[in-house]
Length: 379
Image 1 (cartoon, one colour):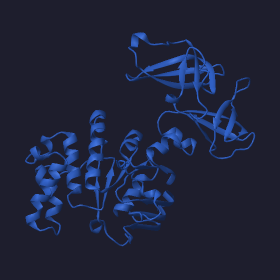
Image 2 (image 1 turned 45 degrees about the vertical axis):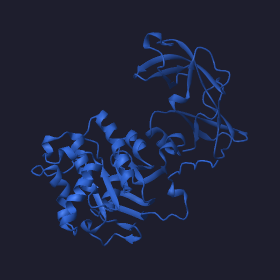
Image 3 (image 1 turned 60 degrees about the horizontal axis):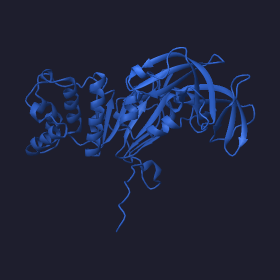
Image 4 (image 1 turned 30 degrees about the horizontal axis):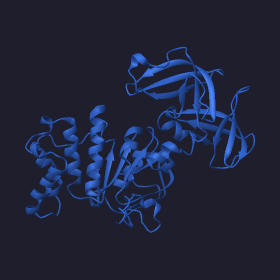
């Protein structure tokens, strides 16, 4: 009996034979003396759902506006499907952009909003109706085709804007904070809808967001930006589990960061002395460090076990007292004060009812974790 084919993993960035759809080469953008994007190099591949993530002012929106043609690079080149887009005006690029405000025409129906760009394109008139219907089906809006934007919900308006953006089958769709106007629950639902539509159409999506959870949910890869530079580009799992710096570890999700001095132990192991009279942290390391070198140990709260007694199966065991408890429904976060005065956050799933919680305020507890649970960072 033949073996079932393993599921194909989408990772064109790992295939040297794959050419990127988008290539930024040494791109710099200055506004007067302010550098918004600083000598940036980046490849984005066909079929990706790529996220540009960072705080306000990090350069992510400027990068997207240059791709759309609304800004010109001060230096460097931007290639789209092996074509230098610098001389091509925005309306001639095979790119569409969807804004946070949706920018729908209030006096037009949903059908006419979607058809608007097609009527001004070179598409034969007899094909426009079929294309609009296909977009209505894709975004599950058939029953709302005759309504005006004010007669539908925010999530439905978002889907109209998406349908209109995809109607002309662009090679690239740019999404600028597209879900920012939605409430949290609707935003989470719409994230999965976006992923489904992107997969069905095969269109390359590039999304700009400052919402870490959104980027981690929808993206094939995430580029974390800071002060116009790329700090790290990796899959969501890579960004979360193996950040390359304290900045990335701290920016994505919750994390404990402990500063200490390294003592290499051989075989990829390192001890980190972080307080006098306390057993060092035992960890594994990917890059070599020298004795006494300042390092940062980053560990996510969910990697830490909280118990009445130290867990003998885990390499690291340290005592503390419960200082705060945050109940979040599915999980509880415990802020534990170590004997050194440092605060460590640990998370536990609430498998039991709250009335049977194991720990409460001021309880003495032991925090335990394995030597591979955290990441040792040198910057």
